[in-house]
Length: 457
Image (cartoon, rainbow, N blue to C red; front, side, top):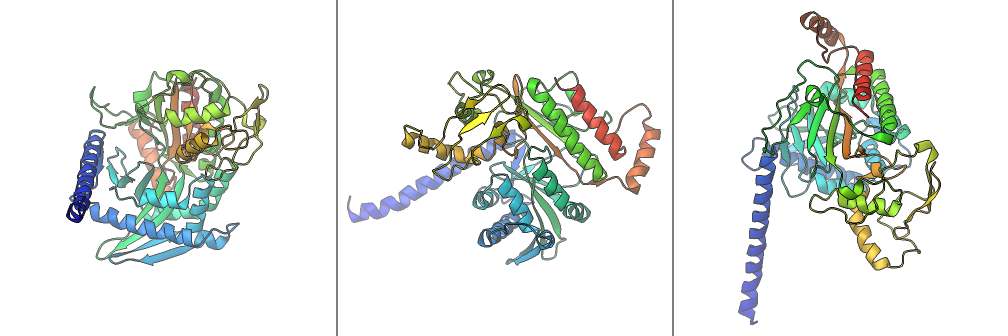
């Protein structure tokens, strides 16, 4: 190839690459529209706002990367406010070290978190059937929700942040939604916007077949399902779930206990109107058997979240919960695929000890192949720990007899104050024979527990 041909080949290859990216991006845009997720493109009303959010979040996380976390959080970390000035706006980050600590406890890296929030792909707008006036955005990879909040709601979260963190530390399998950041953005000549970043309960959602928002009551708790054959995402409600059950078998006592623990915590906050999010997807055929191999558990987990393939090996382990957490001990350090020394030695259970497969230790006969697998495992390892014994639960994933369930508790900001008390008495007179959302926190807590009790097997 002569010099002229070489000079021409570079731009040609570049143009071809850009064309392929546009085609691929166009296909994703069409797919998201079918699913009810709308790309926030340059013509979208929120395009400018979300671009500023991405820029601001990149800088906010970079500040955490450049300033390593302390060994222990102090009161100043909870009260810290950091303001960063950008060309057209300023971004304030609240209690940054605290949320960074929570992200770390969930197995996230700051670089990975930053990349997800600030990737080249546009945010997605999620059209919720919620009655709130909040705007919902979803990162391009659909791992994180960004939701606008009122000043009162943000103050409520920050004032209770310490006990929220203590609750998650004490109960690492808590169903409470994981809040990962609180920010305020100020754009010239516009009102300030507060927003939070939280982990999506419905991730990964490739194979989810139904989604529900449960409050445990009847009034206004029906949503018309999507027409048959229509792929638009519809979040259904309590009355849509009637006649169905969450079939968990051995996992049921764990779920009932965790719902009791989490709702008791919310009762101490004097809140109501929170929702139990629920989604399910069918298990693959080879996920239906119940074995305890740690190695096959990890491989099955990796493949089970892949919408394009099904595991082929016959042995498939169950998720933890079959063995009571207090009777199950993982003796090695927490799985860390970024190192080459990570392996698990032995897991004890009430059914007898079972040897666990080493992932990257000396016992592995083919380190090159396992090294490749470990790279593949890095992304899902931190995102599917509910499927691993004694690991924290960022995703709220739990396997039943025939379905995998995604479960989480969201919207915990509604305090039972004077206005809500008036609303309760008005609804009691207006709807004497129906159950409605606005009741006292103890009644709300009890009713949601009862719903879970009645709708699980």
